Amino acid sequence: MAGNDERGLITTVLDDVCVRADYHLLDASITPNHLRLLISLKPEQTIFHLVKTIKGNLSHQFGAEFPERLKRHNARTLLARGYFARSSGKVNLEMARRYVDRLKLKDHAAEAGGVNWSDYLRTL
Image (cartoon, rainbow, N blue to C red; front, side):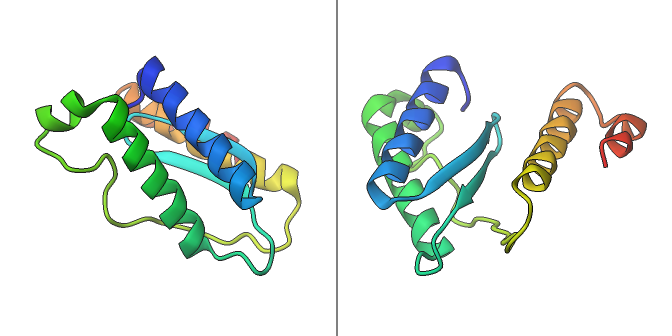
């Protein structure tokens, strides 16, 4: 999923959605299998609505830009049904970014053939 064209589309859609809905995208990690986002929401904004809006817009735009890729995989949509969200509450932004960076390191190591746990544990 995460070639240069796809990455550009995902980045554009994320930026557009966040501007329209007044979300604050703090960090994003785009890998072939995952999309990890660090987003700041106002108390009245819900994670459910955020995910629904982002997934809906990404799916629509991806289908419009790359219909042959969906057909090749016999898929109607780009994204899986579920999602995983975690609320960090009122935490230090730097701490949240380090958390996302650790996840990136773990994903990168896994894609390279396995997690080097000693390197991963040093980031904690």
